[in-house]
Structure formats: structure tokens, C-alpha cells
Length: 95
Length: 333
Ligand SMILES: [Fe+2]
Ligand SMILES: [Fe+2]
Image (cartoon, rainbow over all chains, first blue to last red; front, side, top):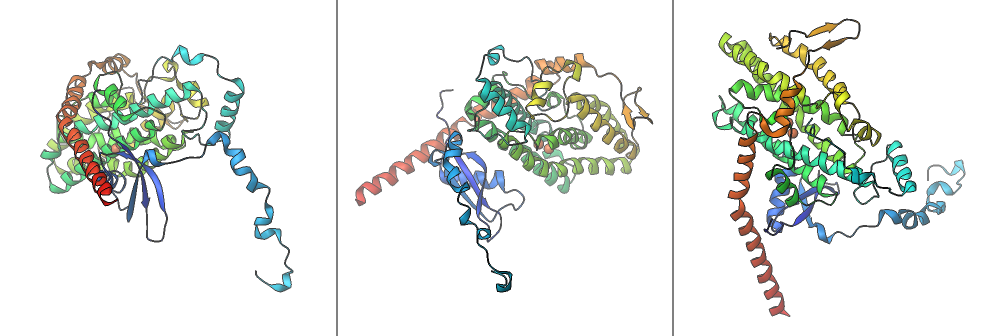
């Protein structure tokens, strides 16, 4: 095909007020305005959202899944980051 | 199903991949972990998924044509609105699926090209014509009903993006089947002539619907590997049987007769036994020689060609705006 490719956008939707935007898929569109319209038509036909973000897919920077262990291992050993690590006498009550 | 034409496996995939990686991959699949696009995966797994997801996407897109044929001739505003919404959903399903396929490194343009050139397959069912309004009901009831049978287990597919797309699709499918069945119920209750139209539609759509599940297990080349990879959870024949068992009583409720003289209920197994499927017809339609194959592809090509100026104009407009913004930024500095 000799035509230029239409850019890809990642779509994030806030399902209800108070919720975070969540990734739900992607759309192709020439510009940000059309990407928003396409995202509305493709991903919110039944009131699935109150707000949409579209982000050029090329702008996403992702961690490398093969480096997962190195990347996230340090947190596994730091059990003192969790409240249950600390002993509080029962008499003190809820804390 | 929507991917029934997954045929011969590629010999080049059998080349040796790191045994340790393969074992680790299979262990993740066995543990029901989802595989994500950037994770290591066997080349054959990637290829199978690209083929399956894109065939599924093409089926949704081509599937808009037989129903779109009746939008302007729906008998009431209510039915027209429902059909329009259903066809729009199918377009949406196609788009969810194309984006899932693209996560595996294939571009939308390549996928479109494969469909338009006739290289890619789509479900054989959409190569049958919609002759009367009752066909619209029959498609919702039978074709979407068969699709639901197939898609529910795909929600648990090992590939994350495919499984997530299927969850969205399944949430939307139930309305498709219900609007079709309700439409037929209304026709069957209205008059003998309308009921006869429904019977005629069932006669024509029943066997092609059973063929949607693909070749019988004895002839299905892909089942075992796809089951091991947890892309597939049930075999073609298992799904077909589930569909028959669910659908026969629904036909009886409408007061219709299924076009299968061999159909009988087996008290012992609790299943409906059905007659031999015409596999020659199936092969003919998959090979491109069904009643509407050429018409369907011609319609897709026409839509693509006639939309070319829109795609070009949108890109040119986007570029113009980008350049203006850029010029304004430089001027402001
Ligand atoms: Fe669909
Ligand atoms: Fe559907």
C-alpha cells in the first residue's frame, strides 16, 4: 500500500466520576480530535465513560517484561513497608 | 468459527526455539497466567494468534454487510434502531479485535490489505445472502448465538489482549441474539405467512450456522496445539453440540421444524443428535465459491477505495495543523 499509515492512539476511559482513567484499547486516527471521536464511538456506546484520554501510542514508554524480576524484586524483600510488620499491643486498639 | 479457516501449520515454525524458553512459556500458560504482547512467546503462537484474531476481526467487519442490507428496509423504527445499533456494534468488535492483533506486531494496513486481496479468510457464514426480513432475525438468533458459544470460552484465552477484547464483545452480544429471537417470535405470532418466512429462514441458515464451528474434530488440524496453548478451550464438535442443545428447544418454542430429518434427542446422553453436515458445501464456501463471496469482497474493496480521499484529506489536515502549531511556537520563541 502506498498510502501513509494512520497513527495509532491508546485510549483511556474514566468509567465514573472518582475513578481513575483506565486503558481500554486503541484506535487509528489522523489527529487528536478524530482520535477522541473514534474512541467515543468505539469504546463508549453504552455509557462506559464520563471522560476519555487519547495518547499517541508512540509516546508510551514501557518497562521491559524480561527485566521484571530485577525491576520489581527490591520491593519483595522490604516487608517493613507493610503495617503488619509492626507489633502493636491489642490493648491499644485499632491502629 | 469466525476463524474456521485456520488450516495447515507453517513448517518454518517448527524450527528450534530455545527449549528452556518454550518450557517456561508453557508453564505460564499451564498456570493460567495471561501472556502479554511484549512477553516472550513461541513464533508459532504469535502467528496462530495473528491469524485467528485477524480472521475474527475480518468476520465482524464483513458480517456488517448481510445485515446492513436491511437497515433501510426495517419494518419499524424500533427494529431499524436496533439493527443499526447491532451493526455498529459489529464494526466496534472488528476494531477491538484489530487493535488486539496489532499488539502482536502486525499493522492495520497489512491486515486490511490481507482482507481486500482475498488472502485472509473470514467466517463462511457471511457469504450467504439475506433474502427476507426473517433472515435478520435468524442471523441474530443463530449466527450471533453460535458466535456467543465460541466467544465465551475465548474470554479465558491465554493471550491478554484477545481475552480482554472478547470480554467486551461478549457483554454486547447478548442484545444481538435477543433482538433477533424477539423479532422472529413476533413474526411467528403474527400470521401464517410471516411464520412461513421464519421457517424458510431457519431452513436456509441452520446448516451454515452449524458449519460456523469449523471442521469436525477428526479433521481439525489445529485443535490440539491451540488447546495446549489455551487459545482454545473446547473443540469444534464440543462447541457445536452445545449450540445444538441450546438452540433446538428455542426453535421448538417458536413452533418451527429444524431442517434435519436425523435430529433426535438422546435420553441417555441428554444431547440432541444431528445429521451429517455437508462438508463439501463448507469447503466450497471457505474456498471462495459461496453464494456471496465475490459480492462481499467487492463491497469491502469499494468502501476502501472510495474512502481513500477521506483518509488522505484527514492526514493532510492533521499535518497542516501540526505545521501551523509548530510555526506559531517558533514565532513565539
Ligand atoms: Fe460481533
Ligand atoms: Fe453480534
